[in-house]
Image (cartoon, rainbow, N blue to C red):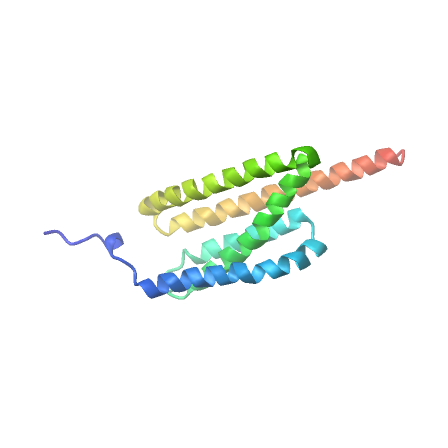
Length: 169
């Protein structure tokens, strides 16, 4: 009888539960501060910051050190807790009042679908790439952050042009 492959071994339950607890705790800690953050920063700034924190969290998962998954879980939860509400607010603002509900419903549905497909796809990717999957995730978050920065720059330029045309400049 052939031995089980290394990835077939079941992880100890306590560390897995602890990582989930740390992630939930991190997300819970962010929620009260969202009101503070939203009052002081633009949505695109929160998206960029959240993506950066997510990227750092995913990058920590590349390391074989045993305690880093706990820090990574907290950072991923905090980054997502800052980024996702800002994305939904940005989508709502761009849709306008008359289409806001429909657009947010579609965005929420697509986000749920992405969560399911991402989990399955990430598991399959992890089977073939191992820990490099998390480096790829970190890179994806950095690209998304760069795209949010470009959106912010374009939006700022559009506001300046609109203000200049109203002032006759």
